[in-house]
Image (cartoon, rainbow, N blue to C red; front, side):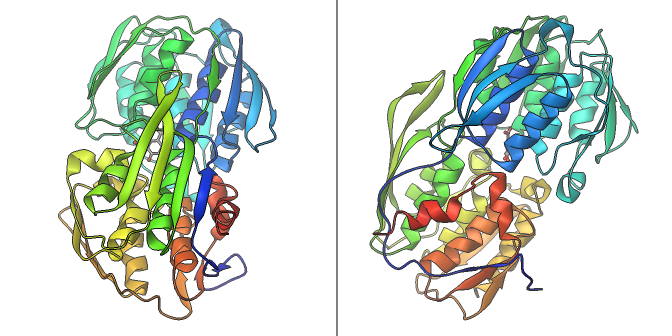
Length: 441
Ligand code: S3P
């Protein structure tokens, strides 16, 4: 299974210490680019994540007629302007739109394209073409959008929007911010109030950002609405650091004896920092401190210190959406904690960039850790004396969060490991290894 795209990850030469920052939040960056593209006028964006996923959103809106002038800033983020299509709408693209690996690009575009009578084919890489899309097309069809093939669950799918969208009240079958957002974005151009109710709260960046673009929006714990038709006007957005990237630095510090870190300028949106709550439950010394806000997003720093003595815990299903991207790395920490950890209600992990549920179980098995799934719950039997076996090889399945999780085994353990297709970390955290190595003094 080993080949030249595999990466050997060597153990760190010492503990991690000092202050770190992480690249811009992926979810907020997508929204800043996409909403600016929809708006009338020129938006100014700073701190935008320069990653493969966000580049997929940038390329897509360019094909649809937005003028994107974002350049690399000294800190590696993107900054500049996006001039949107506003009331004249997007242009008919000449080619299919390739969303790459990005589910957020594909699903949010479906909502954005709903109000315009053009015909657009959305596609993606092999991973994205395997991910479920019927969850998105079904509510949009109720609003009047047509899809070809109409029953398709997988990309490529062709969308034909309509100038006559109906507002709907939608009970989402799962807590998914991508699904919620695509319905709300279509609702901006429907006549009346579109409501999305979720079984548990998913991340709310859309509801926090749309009012900045002039869209009447309400945000409850599980209910969000937009009232249309609204005119989107340009806005200025500064993207804070990504808590999901910060989670990897925090977990690395917890796994590497003697480490003590601060990760600054990160979004502290409660829907995103469920990993801090989970690690606290395991007995970790970790805390977040608010220093201000970017728009309506709370921002601050996270302090974390290695103390050892972690123990297993129970993570209830209502918390799942707030750790949806962090379960792989939290499962790795759980593997080093004393006793059993249970993550409840984790079925959605099967529909991510890979089948993350199976991949976590398989990777932990390589480590000799007992992990299993039962009735949509993930069980991990931890061992504080866990030793990494020599020449261990971990499959990333081309999934960035898995690649970084298994890299921590090598960085924080006693022997090098190999991780397959490691370059996929560029989807969300380019420079991941350098960021960690910079903290070793
Ligand atoms: C995202 C929502 C989440 C998350 C993904 C980004 C978003 O997916 O896993 O990485 O930006 O809206 P869900 O749609 O399953 O919540």
